[in-house]
Length: 501
Ligand code: NAD
Image 1 (cartoon, helix red, strand yellow):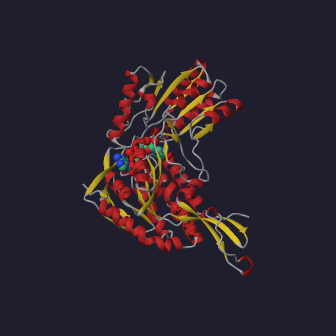
Image 2: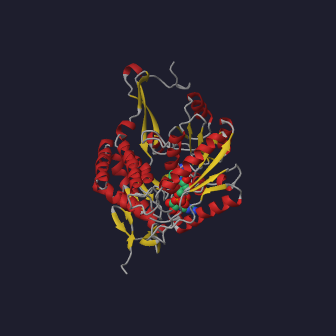
Image 3: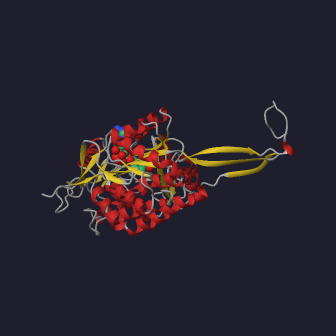
């Protein structure tokens, strides 16, 4: 038996242990542990925050272009090391390698956008707002900022956060998911290689104890969180009560509407990837199809059944596979429990993936694709986020009925409509209570130069993640009004409110 490697923290540019506790990290395709991750205690988190605090003055004073150049070099290093990073994502998360590559590419695009920070940080300047008076507005760094990230995009979601935070002159403490922490750590080490000074980006591995320590520390000025809604809500409430700026992105239940005039074969293939890609473990996954009209529903269900029969499920490292395992044993049990529950509450299980076995991978957390028909509002499999390969079809008679179902749902992350009718698409995007909308696009995840965020209980806070909103989130604006008194503009005491008289 070989000893398992330990995944440490990265503090002040060096790997180090910290905290008495360790947690196993598993290969979900075998169910065997592949590493142990150190779980930081409050003292370790405090050390990381102190390192970030020490690095702050010099980094904040570094010219924005020099900070941006680190991002440009990091982009190249990420591309050069993509295979290594994606192997780690697939090993610990389970998603197929091609999907890991897709995730990393979207992360790299955020690094690329952060390399434009000098342009984005330019303020607004007004000359001569009064006699000899100039006024301008500038974006200043907040200080030490922190990010807490979920398991499902272990490389990309951290890259939504810290590259722009540090490009704006902040320093950062990242707390990745303890279920698959290795890729975020490797990327942080590549950032050091790219020239990020020690202490500017620190990684503390851990769980709730580490998160609580980050939230309790007054040196942390802002927190970005991505994860499940109950935790997002709690972090938003606690962080803001302590005077921090918080953006907390939560869970989702995304609906795809299929109209009778849609290109059905195209909609069906789009839905396959959106529902079963990454085993349904995406906050922008589509777990519910709302088919308008019985004929549409029949055609969609028939198409999905045929496509599902062609799907290959197995280890993420096998290039022939479309879908890997779920992330942990506990999550596997939870998702399978939802399928049992859906049957009990009366939905029709058209494809049952519960009996799947993958030869040579008996211990893996594999659940085959599941398809429900006749899902109804109020059923638990419609109300709750399942986060697995379970797709439900709802049957309605009109677009309005579909929109009412979506608008009544507590989540509002993403949605999409498949149609050839421009007027219907426009009406849908105008009136749907959801933050990100696709028209014949199943996963409308905005590109890096637009921001990402849901509505309702999918996001707590005002500013969305990455893109232009990230510049606003990681800076505070300062308005400066300046006069250089000269003989011509010198005047005596003025007691009326200053105005352009
Ligand atoms: P999670 O909420 O369990 O964990 C997210 C992070 O919070 C992890 O770093 C974890 O260590 C920490 N955490 C967990 N419980 C905590 C607690 N009680 N107190 C403090 N910290 C805690 O989420 P997950 O299972 O890792 O990720 C899946 C969830 O994330 C899904 O709900 C998914 O929809 C959501 N998600 C949302 C988005 C988005 O952009 N809206 C993107 C990706 C994932």
